[in-house]
Image (cartoon, rainbow, N blue to C red; front, side, top):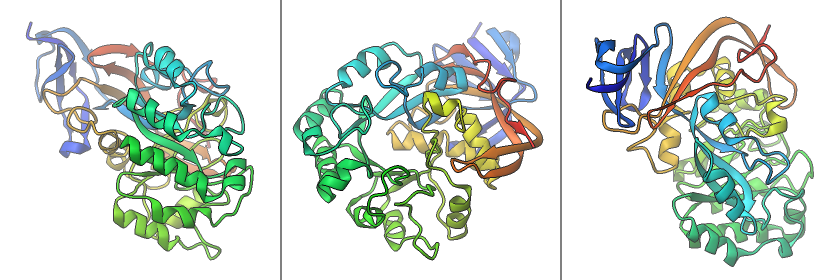
Amino acid sequence: MPYDIVITGGRVIDPGRGVDAPLDVAITNGKIAKIAAGIDASEGARSIDATGRIVTPGLIDIHAHIFEHGVGNGLDPDLAGVHSGVTTIVDGGSAGSANYDGFHEHIVGTAHTRVLANIHIAQTGLAVSPEARDANDVDIDETIAVANRYKGEIIGVKIRACGPALATMGMDYIHAALTAAREANVRLMVHIGDPQWNVDPTITARLLPLLRADDLITHLYTGAPGKVLDGNRNVLPELVDARARGVGFDPAHGRFNMSFEVAKRMMEQGILPDSISTDITKPGRMSVVKSMTHVMSKFLALGFSLNDVISMSTYVPAGFIGMQEDLGTLAEGTTADIAILSVEQGKWTYDDALGVSLAGDTALQPILTFKGGQQHAVDYGPFPWGWLPNRA
């Protein structure tokens, strides 16, 4: 038989190649061998009937917290990953220079999901809270050394532009992370929004001009102090300038940093996200951030098209991690990372981090995942009844 697996009957949506059509997918040796209409299921050693489903590149979550057992809020990487339709996860700074070796060994080295990471500028990452109080909790040289040691696995330096370290160090805290990122030749990932410490809300306007192309703003639609709307609810001009320079925008839902009202206001002013991510944690999964498909469904409810939501969850984040030639697409010869999803119509309700509800008529749920051609069953689901969200 020419193929290991044939997936038949599905609607293939691959925004990176502009494909949205009923097609079959053949896999051989962990690679996409063929995509065409009418591939005979008997040509595969195994076949999967995807009739009524959509077949997309494996989902990519570029902001999650998966240092299970290493930090208090870390979620099992495969529960957030291959058992939820996600084949690649980028950890959002759970570990710093003092404990990254443990993250590499126990998470990257054991997960079935592909794991990349941002290293936190605070030495112990999120193992303690708050992660940094002053300059004694930051070691720029060691951060650079660890980032270089795990070159390719560590793709960024993370800083949260909030908390006591920012209150005590001011812009020196931001510059420390910038120095580490620039010298390690990786991007800077900046958390904006401060729901807990209420430091100077002008910090975002002051740090934005320091960012350059390929740096990433995470929590784009936060409603917390430090958000990118001014007192008149207009987008900061510094954010508009950052977009023109090529700075990436990601909403990263999280427990505290997604406001539907801020999202709507910014969308009205033309500020759209480049990608979609969860900022999922163990407590987050038990509250408002259930899964990648749950967050994707919220963006459908906000008015984004299905193709746009899939693009922001596959092809675009593949570019952020420098792997767009092989991931985020179903082109022949690429790695067979595939998500089979169902699109369910109904009257659904979604909550943001502030408890504001939004109605939607479409919900996505994962059905089956292939990572490098290896099949992974999805979890039961984060709700008591499975994957689908609350009914309105």
